[in-house]
Amino acid sequence: MKTVSNKMGDMNDTRPRVTVLAGFSAAATDAVARSLLLTDPSLILVAHDLAGVRDGVVRRTVRTAGEVLEEGRTDLVHGCVSCTLREDVLPTLVRLSRAHPASDLVLALPPAIEPEAVAAACAVGSVDGVAVTDAVRFDSYVAVVEAAGVVDDLCSTDSLRDRGLHAAGNDERAVADVVVRQIEFADTVVVWSSPGADAFERHRLAALLHRLAPWAAHVHVGDSPKVDCTGLAGRLLRTGRHDPGVPGMMGRALEGYPIGIHDRHGEHGVNAMLFRSRRPFHPQRLHDALDDLTAEALRGRGQLWIATQPGTAIAWESSGGGLLLGNLGHWLAALPRERWDEASDMRRLAADAAWDPYYGDRGTVLSFVGFGLDVDAMTATLGRCLLTDAEIADGAESWGALPDPFADFFPLDDGADQPASAERAVS
View: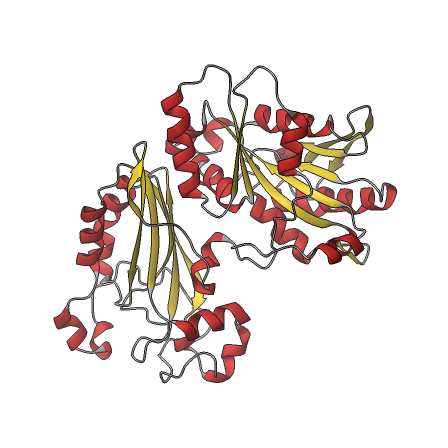
């Protein structure tokens, strides 16, 4: 979901605009960045080299199409992505906005940095007492994918460490996780291809990317030896596509935003499915099915709840055969009414729209994307993991006695783990 730009507001906003390019292929990201520079002599590109980040060194290049404005290095307190953002990226953006107030910026991220981390840091970051968002406005986030290698990366079981791209000693992220997060967070997805690419593979990749990021604009370049730089810039720069109010992927379902599409038949061998349920999962049966569920789908994402932990909204994120289950905090129904104001307006509105007199706002919403997913089999597997009619009839008081392999996986910050009365979330 994207908001429509307020054109009059845009005209009165004099902050330099920032277009963020994220991509796992450094060569493809650099090719897009240089193509954009050619269209506007005032456009400034900011790029970072993280080859020395684990030793606490980040190198930075700032340039236009015609000249290198600066080359520098920053010695970090700790060698990690968050320190890079805090100690170099954010100060550089603010400094350039002051030194070149009439120039828009392109921030090209290294492969190991995920765009959602940048957006989160910029939303709350400040430099010398000035909020980053007061100095610049983030126009759009663009994911650049190289057609020749992105499917292999999405299917890979490699870690960043296996590729020598880990940003810190404790960076255990998987290649597939990083690539898919870059795509999902994007306002625009650019496929950088090459002349003579196989037509079926091109269409299959387009189908996959549209299902991974149905909310994004999609651009394909590189089918001919010459790139239409002006046309590309027209689709990537000054679009106003980014809406900072849209939450990150793991929080989207809670706030009522779509997390995928249901397309059981798909096209070019790629399909997608949505699974929804108000019933909780039986923890042991869900645990026993995890291998089958993660092996079947290229990507899974969303939220769920399990019967033994009625206070906790749980995030599901699977890719490359791996699975991450995370804590999204309390269901509103598990909190006393006076604490519901701690949630965002969208969260409370979404809860109100779907409130159930028995379950409250609790519910499972899962999206899966893959190559030839057996939607009926996946749906049946997930359905078997839910509580049965008999288990539901036993009542919520009995669910706590069910065997739970996830016990203590998702600690909440207090003891509010019992359902509140079934009030609606918004009066």
